[in-house]
Amino acid sequence: MKKIFLILPVLLVISSCSKLEELNLNKKDFATVSGESLYNGATLQFINQLSNESVNSNVTLMWMQHFANTTYFDESRYDMTSRGIPVTTSNSMYRLVLNNYREAARVLKEQPLAGISQVQRDNQLAIVEIMTIFAWSYVVENFGDMPYSQALDYNYPSPAYDDALTIYKDLINRLDIAMNNITPSGGGMPAGYDNIFGAEDDEASMWYKFANTLKVRMGLMLYDLEQSYSKTVVESAAQHVFQEGDVMSMHYLTAAPNQNQQYVDFVASGRDDYVITSNLIDAMQPTSPEPEHVILKVTVTDPRLKFYAIPVIGSNPQVYLGGAQGQSNGYTSFSHVNPIHLTPDRPWIIMDYTEAEFLLAEAAERGFSVSGTAEDHYNNAVRSSILYWGGTSAEADAYLAQPSVAYSTAFTDWKQKIGTQAWLAYWLRGNTLWNSYRRLDYPRLFAPPEYKQGINKVPVRLFYPVSEQTLNPDNYNAASIKIGGDSPLTKLFFDKEIF
Image (cartoon, rainbow, N blue to C red; front, side, top):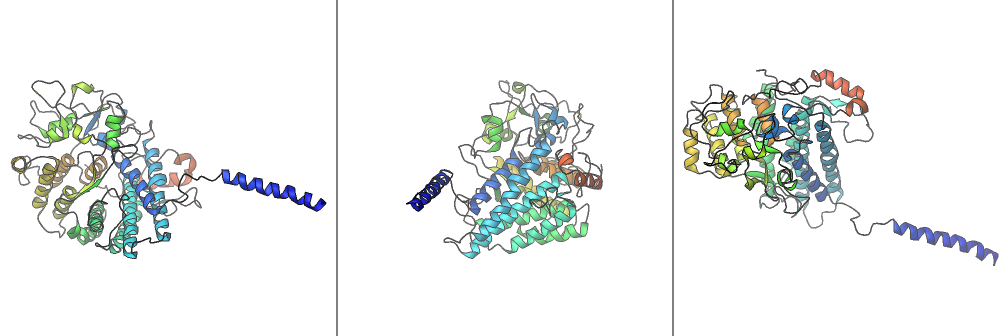
């Protein structure tokens, strides 16, 4: 009997532990996350980072002088440290985007096929890789040298900074491999897991076009540095870019947290933080008297103006007026974003045929072998932008016929022709605008009078995250010295021409 009594407490302990362990089990949430879900979540975070208008996260539409602030205007004056914009950008990209893309690829490789072919799984992995490359290019184009080879690896808590050009070339090589792994008729992500091309019958072929258009853009970004390499990259992709009517958009839902980020920032926030700038308004309609730094003088009102903006509320007759960059602007005194853009499920353009045509116009001017002339591609780009936003063919013809717009009579510098019209066309796409501006040096944008921190020109990069100075000081200091100083005015590897 003594033996029985000794064993019984042990059994009771084991039984109690087992019951306690059951309390730790979460029986409601998923035990595992699929690769498709990880991809979908990372993509939402990435596109939200590209499109959001919070002064804490992304200020490129203010730097590119499409939007002016009403109350909080220091960010338009190039203050990016008070709100920690570089830290927010870096954390979002490394932790929420790149890390989850990496995990999505890992899980998809191990995940059972479950009713799909190996060809479709290969396409899915190629899609994840293409978006990963896109995300990495965004990081490098924002900061320059950044952790890459040792990034996202817990074995390197203080990762070294890789050379930006080396990263960029590796990304282009990776892009080639990803494109070679796509079977256009092989399908892609399952329904509900690709909110970009998921509704398209030819989803995989659209991803192939996007990859080629991205490759053309990346190749052109390197022109100032390595012209021969740039030519090879661009010419290898130019015949496979987006075609007329192609638009790559993020498709949102009506319910939070999957709503259009600009709807969240402009409407759901309940704040009145932004108006359209006078720089944009004055470049889209005839002005009298002429402003000091007018970007484009037109005699015919840009047909996109009525779709981009609304007249000043209560004005009679109705007028479009823009606020001053870097100044406090009364919300009721100036034009606002047209409400058609500010619905929760409004698609947000990532890349499109319009951009592809501007890129091909640039490639043609640089002497690359792409079909068509620079003028043809320029006209196609301007026309497609006008038609996309709601204008008519007749309006596009009248707009293009103006001497200040027609390719043969507009600015003498082709970069100014293309750069100015791209600046007008890339509506609501701050980072695309910023890349175009830094590559072409047009349109001519001027710093507001009361600029901050000695930044007397439009910034051409983000500061390194301030946290790196304390958490990774040796590598931070080495990278800062190598690129020429951790300043927003330090031109990056692709940006070598000086005004």
